[in-house]
Structure formats: structure tokens, C-alpha cells
Amino acid sequence: MRPNKTRHLVARAAEILRDAGVDTPEVDARELAAFLLDVAPLAVFATDPPEGFEADYAAAVARRATREPLQHITGAAYFGPLELSVGPGVFVPRPETEVLADWAVRVLEGVDKPIVVDLGTGSGALAIFIAHARADASVTAVDLSPAARRYAASNAVRNGVGLTVVEGDMTDPGLLAHLSGTVNLVVANPPYVPETPDLSPEVYFDPHEAVFSGADGMEAIRGLVPVAARLLAPGGRLGIEHDDSTSRAVADEVRAHGAFGPPDVLDDLTGRARFVTASKVNR
Image (cartoon, helix red, strand yellow):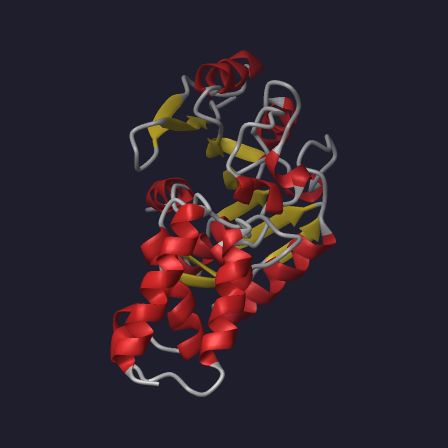
């Protein structure tokens, strides 16, 4: 099969994905081809594929046309400099969460051997990003899901970082009792989507408990704020990702607890308010 045939197959795949409602059909069609050819996306049209590619590619495109996430098909998600293994049973990290990850690394500047906790780690994206940037950090990643913990532990090894993966509920008042009052940074990308049927089909491939959090999307956040307050040392920082419809409610929740100074709101890459940060006051 000549490379121009590859171009034709990718163009046809993009049409199929566009008709299926995929947001980025051309990108996904090329990414799937690159995955099967084991080349960079830019090299797809310069690659003569092996025997059997056409059938394998058609099968992969058919899966994506059902709106199964691209990352489930390729088994990988990219998060900053990291390549993470993902698949059914674990939340696929989104690019917008890199804003919270970058903030986390910035606020740890000047902190020697920081102690960090990631509540609801999923694939380990935030925890591993921080550990990758700060080799001197002691990072604990918490999740209730056995599948998520397996992915997080595997991804830490894959990316060459040390990580302590712990079974736990981010809203448990007694979580990580041995770290109470010692933590420099708590980050959380909790379930925060209000229960609704009006989301893109890809969302429903993620574990329900990693996405949805009650009618208003606030159940997990209400529970984790006091846990973070207990864990943090005076001056420690908290960063929470949230739905763009609940920014004010999350800030109010943090403010009402009483352990934190005035919260700040950060925007994601599209300008939507998606993160609340705060410092624990010195008491």
C-alpha cells in the first residue's frame, strides 16, 4: 500500500468521525493512524503501512465513531511532558488540568522537600506531574478506585518518579491522619459534574464516580475542603478543579470553612473559571 493510499484512508476516516459528531475528526483520524503505524502523526502520510493496516484502522475508526475516547483506543494520554497509560476504569486526564498542575509547581518554588497530597488521583496525572517537576517532593496520591490506583502506580513507574499511592476516600475525615498539619500542597481534580444527561458521549466512558458529584456537582468538594484544611500546614496551599458553573460556590465553600485566606479563581485555557486556590492561614 502506497503512502497516498494512507492519505485517502485517513481522509475517509475523518469523514466518518465527522459524521459521528467527533469534535476533532481530522486530528483523531491521523492520531489513530499514527498509533497503528507506530510513527509520529506528522509522519503518517510518509509511511507505507504494513499488511493488515487497512482492516485494523477501520476497526479503530469504528470504535472512535461510537464516541469511545481516543485515549481508550490508543491506551495513552498526554499530560504536559508525561505519557500516561489510560483505559476503561480510569478517568482520562484533560488538557485543561495542566493549568492546575503548572500552578502547583509554581507555588512550590522555594519550598524545600515539599509534602504534597493529590486527592482523587485517577491515572496519577497531577501527582506525577508534580513529582516529575520536583524530584525532592514527597507525593501521596489518594484514590478509592482499585483500577485508578493500579494505573497511578504503573504510570509513576513509567515516568520514573516516586509516588506513594494510597487507598482512600477524599472526603474521609480521618484520611492520612499521620500527615495532619504537615502538608505543603493539596491538589484535587475531584468529581464535580452535576448529574445531567446533556454531556458529550465520551464523558460517559469515564467511571461515573470520577465525573459526577450530586445534583449540583459539589458533593465531593464539600467533603474534601475540611480534609485539606486538616492536612495542610499553616501557609500550605490548596488547589481544586471544578465545573465552570460552580466557581462561586467552590470559592464560598473554601471561604466559609474558616481555615483559609481569601480564595483566588484561575481560568482554564479557554478562559473559563475552573480552579479555586487558597492558602491556609497561620493559626
